[in-house]
Length: 340
Ligand code: PHE
Image (cartoon, rainbow, N blue to C red; front, side, top):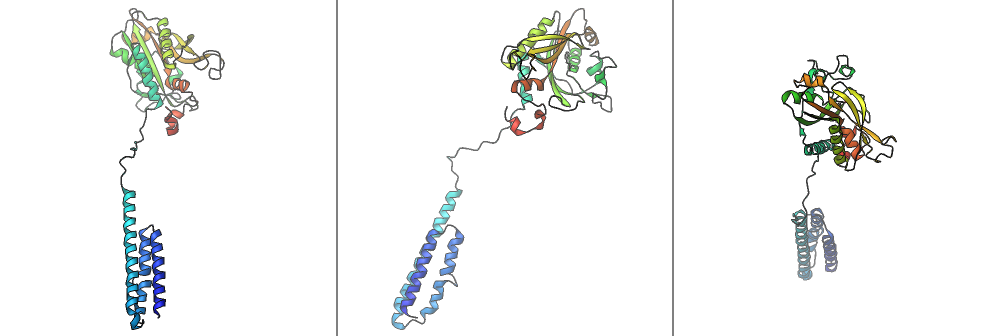
């Protein structure tokens, strides 16, 4: 082979290799260039044999050119490897100036918040929050509350009974009994909690739901006290003035019994879709504690009297936050829960 040809070959290999190394981004690309040139079956290595056929007078020049090419490629290889290593290092380095990543925090369930809000409002009016068991006995849930034996709510069609005769309480009114049997008047409590009824679930009914019970027993308590208590509560909870209206009703454990309506918190009483154009919302069952109930817990109805009320917490939260379906509270959909 002529010297000219050898020199040309070496030059071509070198130009290609340097260009390839310049643009090589990965270790694999760099090692590929090495294999193609200086590797055991690389192009440069192959030319070594050719060297033998060079005429003696050109050997010196050929050897120099050969070594120069080898060194140039080797240097470029080293450079490329170094460049790549420091780039990887930079990519893996920790940037301490980056803002930290906050762990996703959970939040209180909207119903829990409603309970807390209600308790806070009533606490300011002097009511103490107490709780009672969800698994209740017939005496606390029905008998002591003066429910007649044939009352439909006692029916297993409406109430969940346990094999041992106990039941899942159908109303927080059972806590009235537990409270009064445990302490002497004056009594001023509220009791939030879960209740159960065999209802067919729909947008406004669930098999379980939450109530808040209120009970105030003292020497001279009147329906007017009940009304002002509920008015104060409604004003604070909804953040606007709310009128309270009472309609005669019936509950075995109150006498007289009333149904308490709030003036519509959406339209202020003018009439809208939420209040079905009546201007009023049915909110609470209430009344003066039936003297028979006072007797059942060992109080003397000639000495003390009181009022009681109970309302649904879901309904209250739905009105305040404009929630259209009760089932959303137990679906556990993060998109819903994160709005509160
Ligand atoms: N316990 C009644 C209900 O579930 C509500 C109520 C409570 C009525 C207290 C009067 C007094 O419907």
